[in-house]
Image: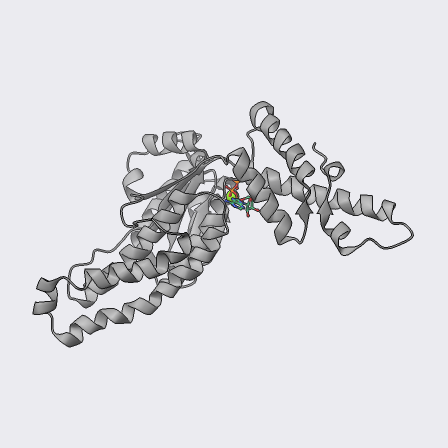
Length: 323
Ligand SMILES: Nc1ncnc2c1ncn2[C@@H]1O[C@H](COP(=O)(O)OP(=O)(O)OP(=O)(O)O)[C@@H](O)[C@H]1O
Ligand SMILES: [Mg+2]
């Protein structure tokens, strides 16, 4: 799906105005403008101010490192919604869209962060009435006795109405096979998706391989989730960029030597770590720990006087401690 709508040649900030150009060009072909009365042709201009809706989302998306294909996909959905509303104003067919999604990726690759943005975006675009996110996992959906699961799942769907129900590690619902209550949760979710059409969006998230297996073994599911977003592991350079961004957000600066040390550590951790590497979440934990270490170091160092502003901001090599 990605890359079809957007012609990307300039910097990302230019996208909203380029969208306006696309809108204008689409409403201008000579054949159409000859046959459409003036008042109707002008009505397409009403849609243009909504481009600021994407500008807002774009700002938040741009704050995220990488994830370019997701940024493009969000723009495609935006364009689709804009054109659908123009088409229905022009009396053309505009099919009801289904926005249920599958998010595939390792821990800490931005799935929850993007889901929150998606919820807000759909609320602004008028697709969802509330735009909140209810994040659940197997234990929240699956009960202990017959009938319990259906009740728990229905209650959560009710809570998610007008927003997004985000099921993390969704593949675990299929873990126990036919007799497991997880299967019941899936059945209830599918039924609720159909009964309450566009009142909530369901996002199933999890590791890539497990999600592929999960979807393969539940043949009714893939067609119900037309949007699939892949969240690849971040490269070392992206992780460093994320670390610098996280430090900056908190009014800290990483010294160049600290960045070198972090880079070397991340390289080792990604390859040799015992657990699945948790990407940006790992980096966030490192930054937060280094901020605590810096506090202890400065307090010890300046027991008498007071450190300057720069010192209070600086994370040094010795502040980076890894577990
Ligand atoms: N591309 C990014 N740029 C900047 N920060 C990011 C990016 N991706 C993730 N983060 C940050 O990393 C942390 C973890 O991200 P998030 O919780 O969205 O990951 P996740 O994929 O949902 O992880 P999990 O599967 O473990 O739930 C958050 O603090 C988030 O803000
Ligand atoms: Mg998450």
